[in-house]
Image (cartoon, rainbow over all chains, first blue to last red; front, side, top):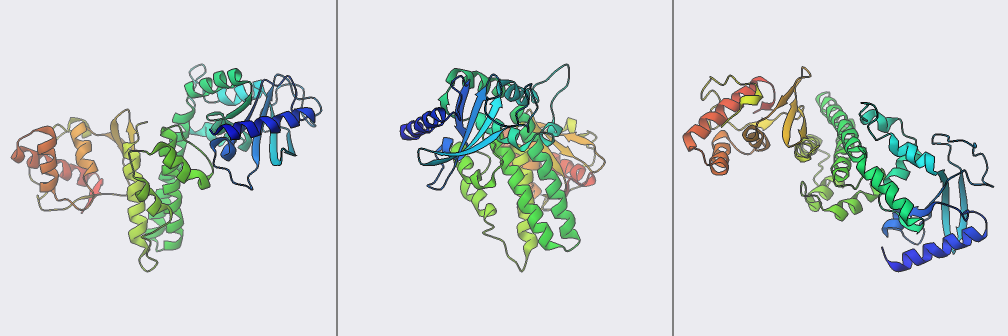
Length: 263
Length: 103
């Protein structure tokens, strides 16, 4: 991370603290998303996470005990010339989300775990991996270590590949019934899930397709070259007069990748 | 080539002609569990491939015939060429009977 990114975030957080939007006793404050990765542009917001022992005073609608997400209060503020989306989590909420991916009493988390996540949890967990830390580095490091030790990536990988399989089946079924348009979309989806699973196996899972090329380049997976990935992603070889070729080739690539990623 | 854990029972020698070009069925789902390739068959049965069978499976790209696949195995596993071709043809016949490949 570039130092100026970190310095800018510190100014933002200081301003938010002065305005009472970040409590002084916060356990941790960090930015996630594109800002944390240095992938932001001039129009990007900062996705800011504030973690406290207790629900933050002055923030509306937070029940006093430990609600499960998605009961996450949010604020929108501009600070230091940067628009911020701020989420307020309690430490227990963060750990509850992580605990979903830990084995308890013989229960092994599986793909269904992902289906039960709220959108807020999905983004929190993926952003905990590479946060841009403003406050509470020690707390964040230990929390990220707990997440890393959980079944999170294995479960995400399985979930992605299960969806990829479903989309492959759809594509082939639709192709067999001469619905090439639906088959094309299904094959694209299958490839997206397959690549997301592949990247998750390298610890680079993210829900937003727009960052897939960035994530890909960040880990440079050995199972498929970037140029090959990109040619499928942007459908370079798609021939509208003969979509079958591209669809079958894409499904074949999905199967090939899934045979190589060790689960 | 050992293909014991793809179901065994390879008694039909050279049933798959060496010049035939096999390719994987796109309908077969696949996973790599701890380094072992598992194929999902139509009857919800999973088939675990031996190391050499997995190498063959990965070579089924619709471009190589059985002879060319056997050549790769001969090189990779240092086995006799004639034996490799015989085993590859037997394995492909078994794959075909399970719907794993087509030509």
